[in-house]
Structures are given as C-alpha cells and as structure tokens.
Amino acid sequence: MAKMILLGPAHEAAGTREDVFECSTLGDVLKESVARYGPAFGALLDVSQVWLNGEPSAPSSRVDAHDEITVLPPVSGG
Image (tube, rainbow, N blue to C red; front, side):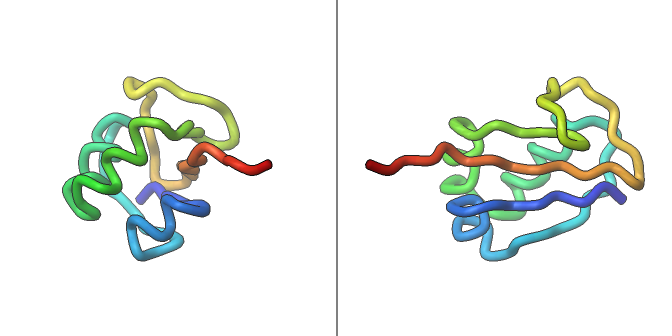
C-alpha cells in the first residue's frame, strides 16, 4: 500500500499525519483521500502540491506498495 504524508494544514484538515492507500494511480489516491477526509480536505488539496517519491507528479502516475505521496499545502507568512 502506498503511504500518504500530510503536512501542515493538510494534516489538520485530515486529522492524521499519515495514511495508506491501495490504489493504482496517484489520481485514485487523491480521490480516495477526499472521500475519507471530506470536502474541506479536497479544497485544500486543490491548492496543494502533491509529490510522489519526492518529485512533483501527475494524477496519471502509477503508485505501488512502497511509494510515498506527500501533500504540500501552500505556505503563507510575512
């Protein structure tokens, strides 16, 4: 199962720092994560970067059991 790491506001929106998914593509993982965590998480996901094994990736990217998906929400500050 692929592991998803949720950072900052994504962690807060989902209520967890990590989860695992048994999906075949990154897009399927993202759809399943919105189904698990709800529309507020989906809205945050829309403005976040999603990396697969440390690299920006497309929803069509294949995921395998040992892959790591990281959700990187936008950072603000001043």
